Image 1 (tube, rainbow, N blue to C red):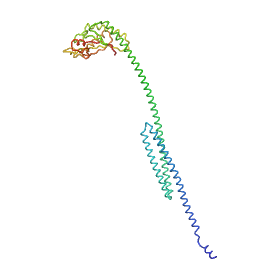
Image 2 (tube, rainbow, N blue to C red; image 1 turned 90 degrees about the vertical axis):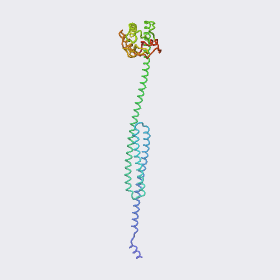
Image 3 (tube, one colour; image 1 turned 45 degrees about the vertical axis):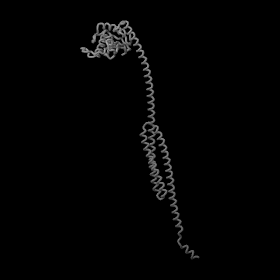
Image 4 (tube, rainbow, N blue to C red; image 1 turned 60 degrees about the vertical axis):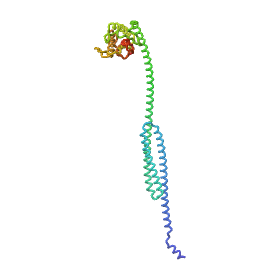
Length: 342
């Protein structure tokens, strides 16, 4: 027995070394698993945080799109910026997918966990920068939208004020137009009254003569009262008639208020027969105008204010009688006096 004990004591014992090696291996595996679990935990937190940030970013972009749809000004520029922001969001989503791929690769290769964790941190830093830029762009867009809303409100206020002024101006114009129409009607009534008085006085003075008659609002004198055939020089008999007319006109000018713009229009008319070989006038236009001018000049010489007289020639184109006989010719050769407005 002593010999057997001696042999056992002298033999080598491997068990402690095996236990130490096994413990070291187990501790290494536990360490790697711990590192893997820690990295996995942080990666899960980062990915979850990025998903929430992306969801918030999508919600803000949707809200921004809805606000931008209500804006009337700067739409094109804002749409371009939204497109850029969406492009940035697409890049962020692509980066997120890449990070997820890194995460899956880390799960399949535990031995490369430390290196991939560094790469993941870099990717997360880049994602943070992208997110920060996106948020800054959103803030800039919000400021632009606020400015556009202020401009739109200012434009609406200006438009309301302009419409109010326009409405007030239209009301004033309508009131002035109504007052002007009333004033004009009163002036017309006054002028009509003075015209009636003037014509009544002329009727009383001239009497019932066949060569002088009233047609509507005009006194009509046959040309033979004032002129010889084809001539524009006043006859003495015609001057006597015009003396009476001048006296009535001068009295009338003293009675009519100065603000009423009245004139006595002297119209010369001829018959349809052309002037043949006349040494003075080439046409009935010249003859009718010259006769009207002669009457006006004579009235001015008698003291009638020149600003109250108008001379007009109508040749043969305003006949009273459309006939083609001597009586019609005689009726159409005439001088007309018409009291009217200037």
